[in-house]
Length: 280
Image (cartoon, rainbow, N blue to C red; front, top):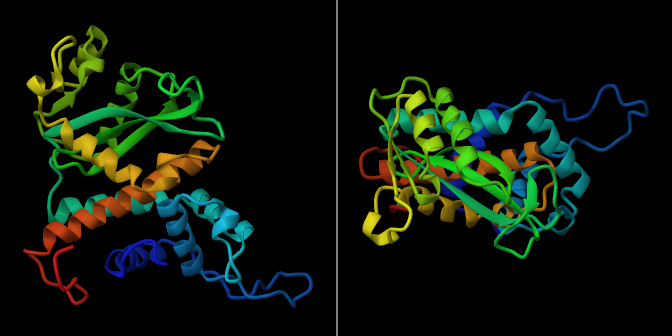
């Protein structure tokens, strides 16, 4: 069963494969010279997509084409090469060039998910009876395109994560002169306003004690993106223990979300050979 439709995975793989180094089918330095051929990168990539989408274990997704050890080893190799981070950066640049990122309106919000296995970025969850949980402080543009995230334990408050999340804007290149950051009532503090003022940003912050529907703003974009990310069950229930692995899966999910939005929004304005026959 495919994890994602071909009109989405094919362009994703084309760009991903371009970032991989060329490797021989057989290792010329093998001491015996009689080992099996190297497993295709495309097979491992499809396995990672299934892991991300379905949230199953490595052993559960392994079969005769690829073992769980191969999936882990190839994943670690690609993380060391920075392939996942580069893929996300290239996809964001493509989206900005074709559609355009709405960087004058930024939304930031924190989200807690389960982390049953614990790990480097896990902590006691205040909303799940003290069980291990993961918090991500996510940032999106005005349409909901994910721009980055900061990982922390579930017991960390949203406010201290604001500054490192805003620092991710430095990786996006030229920014508009006036940027408005939309935040919920959890950020209603003097520390938040100081962090925004130091960076020359305007803040639209919901006030504590006032019902949310009355203060509805463009903050809903980040909440919608959070739902998109949680549709990838590997992120909604995290069993990875190392932060670099969690970030790699998030970068892959963000690249998928961005490409899906790019194809959907460009479907009515652009034509290309493998364009889906109907708007996705």
